Amino acid sequence: MDVMPFTDAEIAYMRSQPLARVATLSPDGRQPDVVPLAFEFDGTYFWVGGTGSAVAGTRRFRNVRAGNHDVALVIDDLVSLDPFIARGVRVYGLAEDPVERVGMRSWPLYAHHADALLELKLGGPPRGQGVVSVAADGPPCRACRLGTVG
Image (cartoon, rainbow, N blue to C red; front, side, top):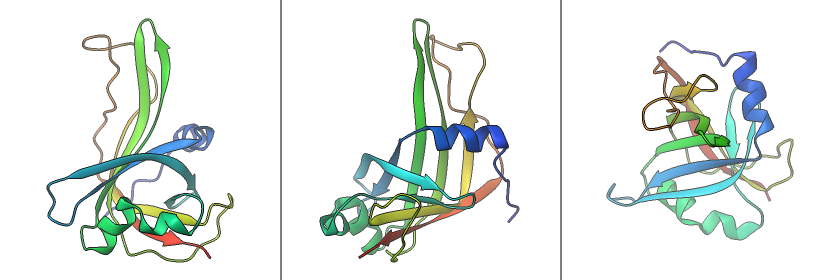
């Protein structure tokens, strides 16, 4: 699988955003769970999580530990309300079971994403019904792993 690295502009954008949204699926694959949370991009992987030991018991971590390793991560923001312009980065990947990790930020629970599909729209004029879509399909590029820190 080819790796598609992020551009400097994409990395700068992702590092400028304080929140990401991570989506996991229930073990039966029928119920999605999406939650906003802090994240870190270390140049290769995305790490997401929260504070305290209770985060390990959250639905997103339980879903992955139960065997449904499909995840999606969205980092986005709102550029303008009039016209409505949203932008962001969307990554799809496979999560691994929780691991211990200490990151640049001191939140104890993280997930990192690789082997995924990157979709990106960081600029340009509004399209469609006044919405700038998050799109620019590319080859697979990243993957995921959920982690905890003591």
